[in-house]
Length: 303
Image (cartoon, rainbow, N blue to C red; front, top):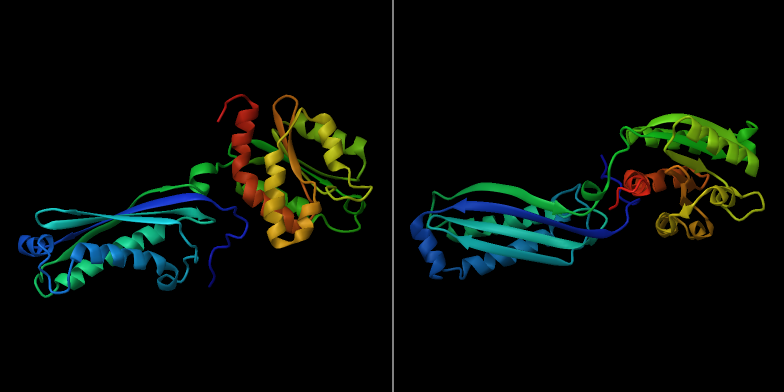
């Protein structure tokens, strides 16, 4: 039993809006409107209960991550025989606020029920639903379905069979999970000419996106970024910055990595990753869903 791992995500602006409705007798609604309930102002108390509910969400739902939010707004609409509740939760976080918004609505409706139960035994909570959500993976990430990709591992020792290429094989798995067809895979030594040849072979095989793993450090043999940059026409600096920001949360040593991404001639994209399995996993989780958008921009399709 475990929660979903969101440690690889960057914090982004997110928002969720939920809705709920409770049916009451017209007589009970009149008491609420005229503030005649013994326990006080039902609508304002229910708004407050909804805010409390949103804040307590991770303590009520065991698999809901304990993320703070920056804003919550609860609105009420009173009809002849019903009350509607709408809750909007907004903030900057690694995961969404659907459950916080739904919990806010649920608790607000339960508070109405509690304050009115002595006057109306026919109350029914009729509906609770999510109206909308913004931000995060569902809004910005796309699969790589229909695209051809390639993986090139750059390592002297792996190319000689001294150790198994785990990072390259993981990159292939991740690309397949994203829906792409991996048309080329090879392991090459840290030699500029050999790396260049492998990249050209990958493109000749039809790859639109190439992933390299290894050679992004500071040793004399780490020359993958320099080799790729000579072939490239543009650098996608934001990808490299994002990888170092995320990586530094796991280890400060990530700040010495020169991982990045580049635009190659003929509208191709190349992502230059470190050689560790963990880095490949985290950075493809972070950027994999953005590669199609980046490639579309390379092809002139715009934002």
